[in-house]
Length: 54
Image (cartoon, rainbow, N blue to C red):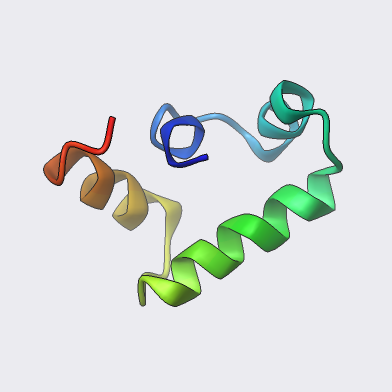
């Protein structure tokens, strides 16, 4: 999931890739941001690339 976010996928592209609903994607992304105490997908992308999760 982090890879798709870091690659800049939209929620719609993300949902199509994983065959899930857009709302489910939004919920998952929100949960990840909350758990990592981040407020934007941009911050998450920076974290992923800095820590070399990709």
